[in-house]
Image (cartoon, rainbow, N blue to C red; front, side, top):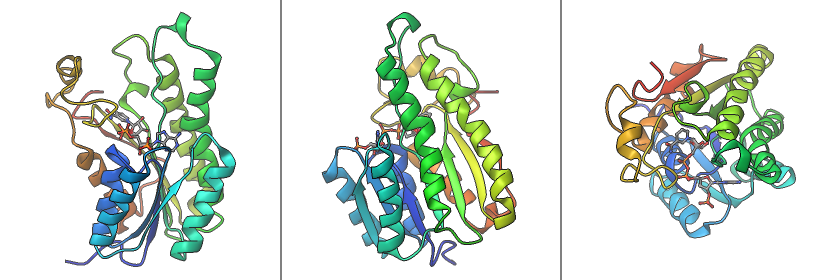
Amino acid sequence: MNNTLDGKVALVTGGSRGIGAAVAVRLARLGADVALTFQQDKMRADAVADEVRLAGRRAAAVRADSADPAALIGAVDRAAAELGRLDIVVNNAGAYLTGPLDGLTLAEFEQTVAVNIRAPFIATQAAVRHMPAGGRIINIGSNMAERAVFPGFALYAMSKTALVGLTKALGRELGPRAITVNLVNPGPTDTDSNPAGGPNAGLIAGFTALGHYASPDDVAATVAFLAGDGGRYITGATVNVDGGFTI
Ligand SMILES: NC(=O)c1ccc[n+]([C@@H]2O[C@H](COP(=O)([O-])OP(=O)(O)OC[C@H]3O[C@@H](n4cnc5c(N)ncnc54)[C@H](OP(=O)(O)O)[C@@H]3O)[C@@H](O)[C@H]2O)c1
């Protein structure tokens, strides 16, 4: 089978766990060299980088808080410098700060905006300086942007909805350079931040048509499709990988 991402270089933010780790490994298995960022857990980031190397690809694990613009730009530039080019950026790192409106703080508001909105903007701005024709920007949003089934998601849903506009506007702007920009909206996905064995998991899964959580690799499969040649005529789109949560 042809490796559809042979010769490509990808950067995945928040690639040390969960969806980001699944994306990093899947892109590597398809042929891409992969840089990933993390915030705290160097051991887990290094373990994902090792899995990328096991797939026969080069890897870089870079500590970079997505809330820190200089660190994020540094990670983008380092990925391009160490791995020689930059074709694919997956803006995956997210802040998941929830709670009733009257308890939310200004610091939580600012952290949410910094990580979920500003970071994808800044990483994309920095990345396209390196990106050739055929480049791919893939933002990771959320089903919660489209369907608010529980109270307490004002910050999270607001921030993920902003990615719809960012994705469309940049899809339009970068189209002439043959760079596509798309948004993948996962539904409930079994990760540390939303474990399938968690206390509300049954209730959450009940909102999907398929009746169960996704695995991180279910989301990674769609990201990989958009990153490959099969995704070359898709831009500005939102793809729901949510088991029917938003039907
Ligand atoms: N899981 C779900 O049900 C679900 C549903 C819809 C959307 N999503 C979205 O999918 C994305 C990934 O979620 P997940 O569930 O896979 O998360 P997760 O398992 O909690 O993993 C989060 C990852 O992001 C990194 N990270 C967190 N904050 C960061 C920051 N400020 N700067 C850099 N890296 C940071 C973490 O690094 P460390 O290991 O160093 O902490 C880790 O690698 C998020 O955008 C989330 O909103 C998830």
